[in-house]
Image (cartoon, rainbow, N blue to C red):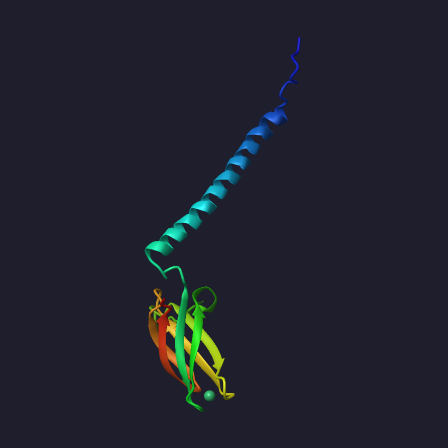
Amino acid sequence: MRGIEPPLRAWEARVLPLNHTRIALRRLKAILRLTMKTVKKIIEILFPGTQKKAFYAAVRCKDCGEEVRIRINRSSDFQMAHDSSNPSHYFTVKKEVMGKDCFNLMGLTLALTNNASLLFADVKGCEFITFDRERD
Ligand SMILES: [Zn+2]
């Protein structure tokens, strides 16, 4: 005679362990996400500023002499370089800016190494002044 529980059918036997795996993976993902957040916070406390990925360049307008600061984001402004003649040229940054008081369009192209050190700067309509990592 059969009990109250119906017998486990073959497909249920296969589906149940899969569901357990899915739930376990979801929990693992949530734990990893929390861990990464915590690790980032700890790094920010131990090494302040290193989690910021911004750089600044400065140029001087050839027409009016105005000095313009340019913010450079590592995530959006760094492009992989395709420079076979110079293997240490790893990133290229291209920016176009205009000052406050004149319509001279200034162009800045930076060639950077893999650790974001400046190799050379190419300018149009301006003078290159500096390239620096953001400091607090
Ligand atoms: Zn100008």
